[in-house]
Image 1 (cartoon, helix red, strand yellow):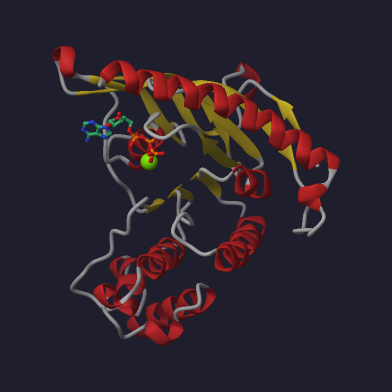
Image 2 (cartoon, protein in one colour):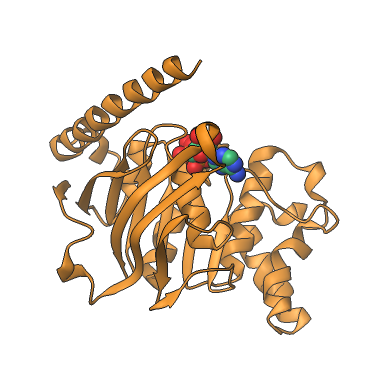
Amino acid sequence: MSIAPIALDHADRRAAAKLVFDGVSKRFGRGPESVLAVQRADAYVGEGDFLCIVGPSGCGKSTLLNIVAGFETPTAGEVRLDGRLVDRPGAERGVVFQQGALFTWMTVLENVAFGPRARGVPAAEARDRAMAYLEMVGLKSFAKRYPYELSGGMQQRVGIARALANDPDVLLMDEPFAALDQQTRELLQEEIKRIWKRTRKTVLWITHSIEEALFLASHLVVMTARPGRLKAAYAVDFDSERDPNVTTSAGFTSAKREIVGLLREESIEAQRQEGVAT
Ligand SMILES: Nc1ncnc2c1ncn2[C@@H]1O[C@H](COP(=O)(O)OP(=O)(O)OP(=O)(O)O)[C@@H](O)[C@H]1O
Ligand SMILES: [Mg+2]
């Protein structure tokens, strides 16, 4: 496996772009207390790209994802999906939040079946589809429970099942596996990779795990410390299957070393800012 630097905002990528970030900036609040979370992000994301985003805590990753989801509006610049300005949420974009956002008054099954039902899928079919995804995330036997009866990691898995059951065009995933144990995480990573290969959905995936990014991504972006800018981007030439030896292969180790190096610089910068701020 290997990674190769690319310019995500290169004009050549524009024609095939599904998702366009055009000078996207986001400032929260006004005046001296305001926080510039994202600064001039430019990128063309191709149809079917699996773009993993890594960067230090607080650098604006979730903010960027929320802008694509239509939950936040940029203070400057714009995001376009299939040429249309993104200015509100839409069913063609499925979101899994960093922290579970399930409907607390619905059972697990109802949560997952909600999207298909809302789009007019008949009840029995929506239920079957929801069950299939619950089985995939290992929660079939919890279908009739309520979210409060589940652990954080289980709720997160329901969120993933719910996003997939909607069959969105674009998947927006904010550290979806952060709360999972290593075993579950690896199984779901493989499952997601299978789904992606089959459906070639466009995916934006935030993670703090470089291994996860290298395993999943077709493209990888490293963000700077806040204000988040795109520091470096890579095309990932990945192996088709998870090979237990891949993580010890020379290609993987050197790719990991490169990304770790970039991230370390940014984490030090983030801590320095924190020190200045307090
Ligand atoms: N709604 C908001 N109001 C004010 N400030 C916000 C808001 N959302 C985010 N911020 C600020 O914007 C910055 C970026 O936050 P964001 O959540 O995007 O970071 P992140 O990269 O996702 O971090 P983490 O890896 O810890 O999840 C932070 O300084 C945060 O305090
Ligand atoms: Mg975040």
